[in-house]
Image (tube, rainbow, N blue to C red; front, side, top):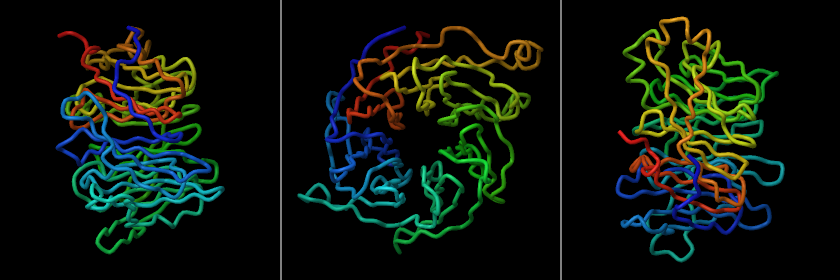
Length: 362
């Protein structure tokens, strides 16, 4: 199915790549976005969907000193978030807190409550502990993975452990396993590496060219945990040209499902936090695609059919939101209302959409 956008729009002042769901805000559908201006003072926008669901309202606008290349919201405190930023050739990462009385201030200033300043290489992203209140977070640079402990009251962040990916690999991002908090996946140019945080050692890898983005399926644990031959969790990877591959982490010789992706680079992929098999992808073809990933059943795994034909060719595209005027780099599902997502195109346009009209009829 093909279609344009009927979503609700909001414009940032400058170019942007980063948007995140404010998961800790359980009273509102909220997103936070950061800009990427080379010459101007950058901004962080706190955006909320109105109670009637008809408009996006800016609840807070905050100055940020540098270009924002990555942004993540704290899962247990809606006022805390992290950014990866650059100033010329230098990169840094920090944890920020929105001022408590920001709604009454004319020019609110973000409070830096932690600096992730141990990196010696270009920082790529930060990852928060997947859920619940916890003081741990991860930062990844081109060479290494760092595990941090944050003390927001003392405004300090301390390195707990660190490990190098090796001289031949340049890390580009990663994802924290929501079902196993001791496991993290990191992406390189040519593979996905899996790390055990207890030992900071690599446990396995997927060797596949041009891997750009990864996301764990937050729902599939419950199904796969019961069918042991399938493994316990799936991971989705977005790949240049060849599209989206879905993997079972106990069967890493080939993906169990392939989706065609975008007409240009597939840049980001996100699994829905509630609806099984629903996936979003964004690309430099100025589109956001909504997919239904019909995964193989236990019977398929117990036969030889998966070995003979590991991918399915049923058209999985539910809808393409394609009225953007620039590349779409940012994607975020709402954890509060999982039928809603926000996308961010490079020209600074935020669009919030509902997937309800495009879901299969039961």
